[in-house]
Image (cartoon, rainbow, N blue to C red; front, side):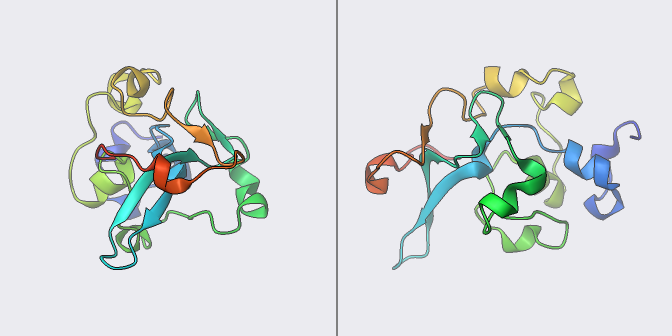
Length: 143
């Protein structure tokens, strides 16, 4: 990978560089609910069963679509069509021409920084396999 590749336009990244942009926050793996009247998207603290809640990454990333067929496939071409990406998402930030935050591991060199900064799902999610009332699990804070 090239030094500071994350500062390049997204369509200039190799596949390996694209994948390396993920900070491991796990927020994209949270279930979302849409208000049918307003169209507003609300995050829940309910996570996909494939999410490693401690590491913030998918346990079956390469084959996730076999388990979760509607799991989103992020590409430079689809980013504009996914309005619910977390505000801190590296893909979203770079798509908007903004820099990565100081806690992003590509900037600081520390994969744990995302968790210490409180920008990951570590410690506050519940598994989707539990019988849950989604309305009781809506997240009040901005994701």
